[in-house]
Amino acid sequence: MTTFSTSVAMTTSPASFANPELVRVVAANLEHVRSRISSTGRDANSLRIVAVTKTFGAEHVLAALAVGLRSVGENYVDELAAKRAAVGDVALAWHYLGTLQSNKIRHVVDVADVICGLSRVTEIDRIAAHRPGQSVYVQVDFTGSARRNGATPRDVAALVEYGRARALDVRGLMTVAPTDRAGARAAFAATNAMCDDLGLVERSMGMSDDLELACERGSSEVRVGRALFGERAVARAR
Image (cartoon, one colour):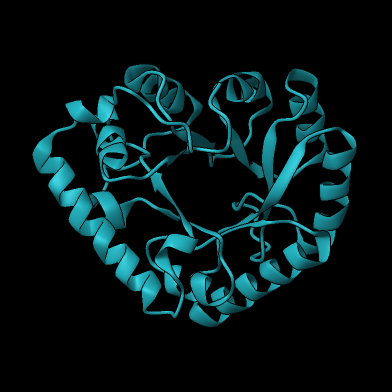
């Protein structure tokens, strides 16, 4: 399995098979994303850009690879597995961003380098049983909505400590911010502060619509799909 670090050099890259027109479009969009990051006073090279290819094809993964991105995010484990198999053994870190379903956790740990939606003790136990040392983020939810995945802020510290005790590589926190700007600012600031308090390096905050707010509040990686690849197809039923 590809490690979290993506500095491995390849002698022959599948990116050479990427669609040239798609690469051109993604490269232009990536330049715009980096410009948006720079507008906040951050060095665009200091953040990881995770290319979210949910509902897009393996050709979009190859295009992301061709423009220099080395982290890919997927919300559905079957899509992740299929695209990983399609592009082969490349220097990519595959991030699983979706909700963890108990009956699919074993499949997730087989194909994901980083599991980003951890929010329950039972998930920690299942992941640790199948893959000790798995890299994970704890997801934090600030909305209180039953439809949102994530642990409440008051439960985060205990989950991080429990994950560490079960020998998982708890690298950071992830959040999907509320849609209003004030709520997003508060959520990103709180996530950043929790990471500082818990000694966590990674702060996965910000997506296509709110990445500037996240960058201003200390994000270490942004998860970008639409801003790189355009509008996606309607998500399928889970």
